[in-house]
Length: 271
Length: 283
Image (cartoon, rainbow over all chains, first blue to last red; front, side):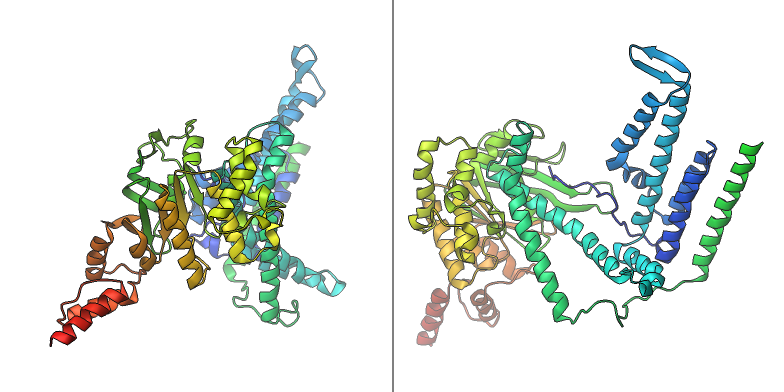
């Protein structure tokens, strides 16, 4: 009974693969492209293409496919919920009626459609975080947003905040796990009673957690100041990002694929 | 009436790339009124083992058996709470679990959870504070404003207040100075005299050797050796375990023995000193 033991949503799993080695900017832009593609392309056949793409990418990433699938588990409820909402609340020609509940042909189509769309959105986003370390991810975002810095956009600060937040998710999960266990060992009942009682029962977990979070934040600020951190100006990197041929190649392949798909999609719709 | 662990195996993140075997076929047995130390380096699996003794971790099917005073630790069993009541677990840095506004509320948390009547609480809390050597004047104070050492005593009292038959402590000496360590060991020895079973998880071999009735040495989740302190000394002075330092006095005794001196393998400086003096006088 380890309480928070599952692979967390958005966890990075290292592997010696070409996908892992791609420049994070390439992967972020690629994911953006895929997400836009999912939104723009309406033809149902597209889902087959997305599944195929995901399979190929997973193969190259050397991660087990089951791991990629498992990463969407936490948001599965949302996917199912969205699908159901569309299933029941889309107006059209009813195929099934029972009391006030009516299911329409359009509803079935929209439900499946929205569910799958959301599912693939999450799958591709998870694939990005599975193959890119949080560090690289925020480096990549900082670089991508840096052209906006002269306009006053806090690219470095946002990236730093993101790095710190991501860095502390596993640590805080561990801390929460430990405190929950400590209170359980003292006989706490964390999962009994009504909502109010449960909230009250969480107090012995939340108070120590807050204390620890503030202490950590304080320690981190001291450590950063002790190493003369003063924002992004003139800061060099231990591992500078380096855009290689393979990044260009991967991105071009993706742009062409999705461009082609959009073109076909529009043609098919027109025909 | 005892804690029995049979062939316990624990795997973190099974069947993922992050899979790690934390415990492999571990066996142990300890009684009330006994002091068992579980000794090992960081990552030896000792903290994981400690959580099994308190049913915070429960053995999965085919991964061994844990039983406490005839309560069998099984997934979903209603006896898990009875096990937690019988075994008090003190985590590393227990002062980090403090949450209440007053020392009284903090120490009363566990006995209240275990169903001690409101009218008896004050007596129980005062008794627990006395056991850890704090006066009643602490009752109304805010635990967050106490010193580090006092906080740890409060945390310990908050576990003792539930009157557990066994006390499992995970690295309780971490962050304490030499006096603090000695005081803690003394306190635990007096708890043992009162009939509680002590399970002491540590990497400090010296404390383990001095205070234990029996010791289990773990490395990489596997048992290296188990037995009374004499046996452990024999085993470890012949085959040292990586990351576990012998007490300095014992190291000296081993060196003397290797140099042809007949001295007992002891970690007690007085004993070693006397035997050296005896030898020197003789020659």
